[in-house]
Image 1 (cartoon, helix red, strand yellow):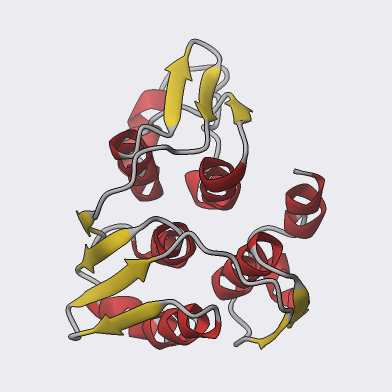
Image 2 (cartoon, rainbow, N blue to C red):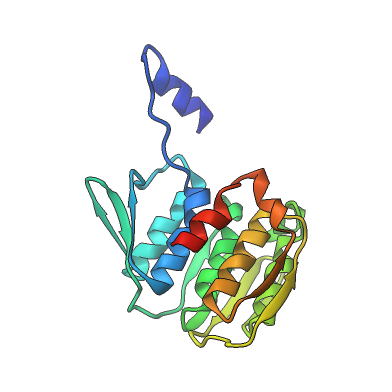
Length: 202
């Protein structure tokens, strides 16, 4: 991606930086499950691995594209998803939340290196899903999630590793269900310090 951007910028006086799909994925996932959201300036981007989420949203008919950007709408389409995430591992925690609430048996392939992120994200995703009564397991190469659209009314208290992506995913679960407490909230400062302000205002 860096090489292509450097070539594109050669000889230009200014260059517009594309919006970040990694950060946008949390609001995209929440919107596709709960409410319509507009994302002006966010477009499909082959240079960003996490922009693969656009393909997934398309499969569930939960996204529209216009000249201003994209919009997500609560999905009506429920079916099982099989998807290779080997080059978009940072997206997997978000997908864990997203797929956990879509009826079907979902399979994310190429997850081996998730255990080597800021935390063992593979293990942490499975634990988080089970806290919210979702079935999930792995064979070491794929992550299998059984989606269920039911919501839990009781509060949950989450103590997660100091991993920004797991903490943001945990927040989505709490907002989606009956609320609760979350720690360590300071983990989001690594990549998205405005996360809580923006997700709560959504």
